[in-house]
Image 1 (spheres, rainbow, N blue to C red):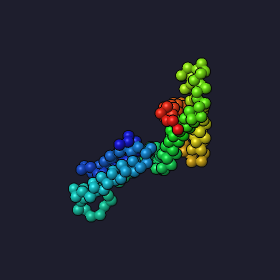
Image 2: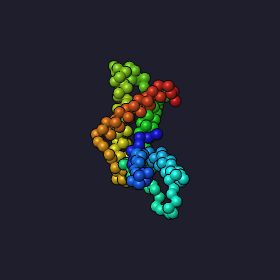
Image 3: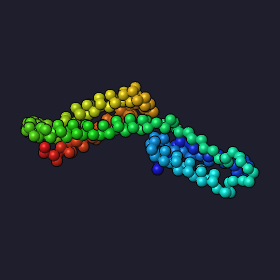
Image 4: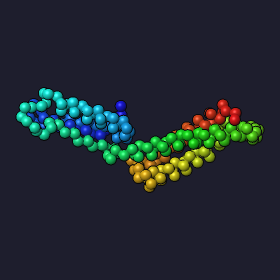
Length: 188
């Protein structure tokens, strides 16, 4: 269950007649999970309202409890705020790894990788030299997707851009390394 972040206030009347408030916080960053949790909370509220002990014989009166929902993140509950960043992460996981694996496997097929075996490069220099261009391509891809997310889809950035960029560099370094690992086992 996600961290409870959005406020769900339930109003009730205590036995003494004073208003009573209960709050629940639902994370709006994952809209589908948050919607499910919200439905459960509203269902519990409806069960509370249907309870015979809550009802009185004074005739029709306003309900003893009311629900007021406020989302701390993603206030409008738009799924685009979850889909655009997740698509960016998926694209940065798949494409750099695939490009990296295809490039090294293609060099194996053509035999041009054997030329590198006779050079005075160390293994680390070879791996970093193969990986850096694809990291650069992935960062350019990230920059384009980030600008599209801000300008076209109107997804706001909350937090530090430099931390996001640092996280992206670490992320694409890992995905390109994964592509190199795949290329070690693939022949074609």
